[in-house]
Every structure is written in structure tokens, then in C-alpha cells.
Amino acid sequence: MFSIDTLMSTYCIFVENNIDKAKSYYYEAALANAYVYERIRPDIFNVMADILLPILSDNEGLIKRYLGYSPAPEMEKAERIFVYLTKAVQNVEVEDIESLEIQIDEISRRSKSPLGKHFIDTIDIFNGFLEKNEHKIFLGINAFQKKMQRHQIGLMKDYMGVEATGLAKLAWRKGFEIDFKNKFIPQALLPIKELEHYESFDFFKEPE
Image (cartoon, rainbow, N blue to C red):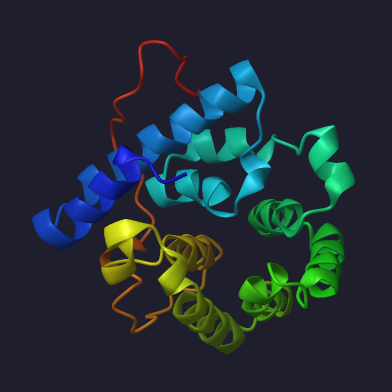
């Protein structure tokens, strides 16, 4: 997930103040992950952030492409929390309420583990989506950012909560145009506006 593209996105947001350029870098990061997933078959379900990269890019084709991904059998069998977090994001995007309820239950089951405790606030976030409760989404995402910020990589700790910002943008995609009043969630990135052109990689077919 954390590549030169995601770092450059942060630079574009906070230094260059260029949101469109930041979206282009998120697109490149997400497209590279898509290539690896489709051609080499490791898994985007190892971390939460990977499913959020196309959402940060606003590229509808790539977002749709990621909705078709599923965890590898060994990941399903291991039942790691990231499988359910990723599925929950997919469920919110397509408004699959029944499946979202299942993911919330699975996340709750794992929220007391050493790893799972870092993601306990996502229960409120996803319940907020389920209940269409804007205030619960606001509180949940801000609490999640605060807990996760020290786990950001390198300089990201001082600038941005990538997962929290991705979830905030997901909220905007679902009609909750929230001002999170949080310096680690760049508000200027949240409005949904697909770029007219995304620079793709020559080695991978661009999503239709």
C-alpha cells in the first residue's frame, strides 16, 4: 500500500496544494495493486488501505474493478480481520446491507485481539453507514484516525491518516458530505470529482 505514489499524493495535498495531481498518484498506486492482484495473485485483503486507494483517486472504472475482487482461499480460511474490513468497504459501496451486517459481526468478534483492537472504531463507522447516521460516521472516523495515526508509515504520521481519509471519502460517496474538522483528514480531497484524464501504465490495460 505505502509506495512512492502514496507519499507523492501526500506531498501534492499538503505542499503543492494540488488535489488533482494527488488523485492521479492514488490512481497509479491502486492500478499497480490491481496489476499485482490480477496477474501475480497475491492479495489486496492483507491490509485495509489497499481497498481505499481507488476511492481516493475518484476513478470510477478502477473503483468498480476493485468491487469484483475477493480474498484468496487461504485468506478466507485464516479469517483475518482485514478480510472483513475490506469486504465491508465493498458492501458499503454497493449498499449490500445484509452482507455489511455480517462483516460488522465478524469485525466485532475480532476487535478484542491484539490486532483487532486497532480497528474497533470501524464498528461504529460501518454501523453509521448501515443506520445512515452521519454523526456516528463522523465520530467513528475521527476516533479511528486518532488511534491509527501512530501506525502510519514514516512522514505520514505528521500529515495524514490514509485509512481514515479513505473512509471519509467513502462517506462523501454515499452522500454524507461531512466536515471532519481534522487536520489529518484533508477536507479538500473529499469532494467527489473524477479527473478528465488519468495517466495509466503502459504495461496494464486501463479500466473501461
